[in-house]
Length: 466
Ligand SMILES: Nc1ncnc2c1ncn2[C@@H]1O[C@H](COP(=O)(O)OP(=O)(O)OP(=O)(O)O)[C@@H](O)[C@H]1O
Ligand SMILES: [Mg+2]
Image (cartoon, rainbow, N blue to C red; front, side, top):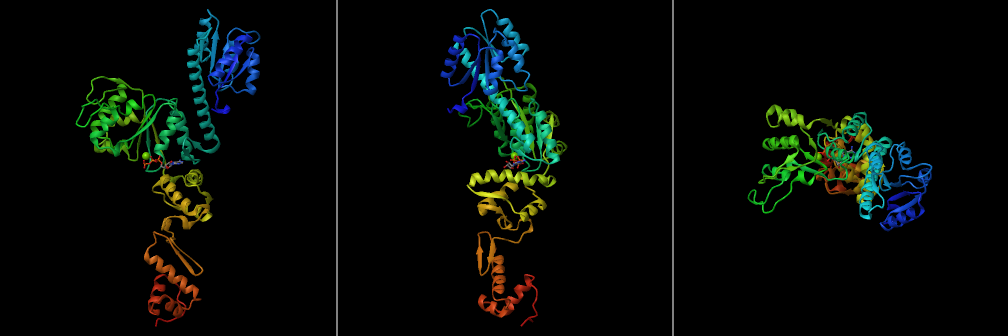
């Protein structure tokens, strides 16, 4: 582990011998430490040594442990603070944990095993706090929330709702057309929640046959059905403590919907073929690109489940309704694609920007990503230009053929008609518009050439049809 990665612990004690013994012990466990001899000295030390965790004695001159804790808690994100107490002052320490926000307390002499376990938990908490602060900073400064990039008014409203709802345990329902970012949103909800250190799992209800969905969700015991050779845990058990995304929830069989509803209400599951009830603590996020209310009207979706799921409902707007997001999202995607394909594409040419701003994007951000991935590979570096876009994109002529001077370059994907068109037009240009000479070079009759040019909409230049 490099020096930078070591968790930093500030040790505060008025007893010199205790300080240095503690410092040695913690250094041996891989922590970077610094020491202070009282509360005042600790506050000074923190300005040079941004500690992840503070480990402090209680009774000290000048500013004691309680005073230090109070000072630390004047900052918006104080480091977790562990109190070491002399024998007999546990009551005061417990009160500090309860009332004043101390992380935990230990009676002296601290048992190394207990101390080490508590330090590890305190460091883990400090990391989580830093992680969520980083997310918040990203959001306010650059229009980023988790993996979502956006600056449009409609997406800012989505961000605001996510920020409020994500830290809670509430079930969420995410709607939106295909490719609008429902899965990325579900991940952002998880990452902004206190569950972020626990698993995030996604189950796609549309990708599983009806017969398998329940065993995937709830698990099964050995021999529960033909083929169940081993006991298996389901998504609810695997995601315990974390978040489970039920993707394409509209495709869930109605019988499974009833069981899911029961699990959401009772927070207990039973494996298929099992009798034991297992407690679960899973935050459910459901996603759908359909209007579930239509399903309710048609009898394919349970109304009670719908109301259970949409405690918070987020609908991601289609990309065509928030075109101001396109340049920002494209820049973020280009970053990732450059890395992935070892390319150095710098951005979009003005023509491409214009084409993108007018295009319908029926596949939303996923389509944008696909178009950019192809373009990055074709361009390799510099700007993405119209010829790097898919043939026929936004009504562009088919650019898999390129003609410059007296050469035609063909790429896979071009139609024979288009290749012929380019070759004919280029040959006519090459002969300075002499159609007789061009026909000869092309091995065509003048009449055929004339007809082709007419078909291409080329201006007639006075030559009469022979
Ligand atoms: N706001 C965004 N910023 C950056 N990337 C995004 C954004 N929205 C979506 N993406 C990217 O677009 C692609 C599709 O996103 P995602 O899989 O979340 O869509 P979806 O709504 O779940 O689609 P589907 O309904 O087809 O499952 C992913 O590559 C994702 O990273
Ligand atoms: Mg999806």
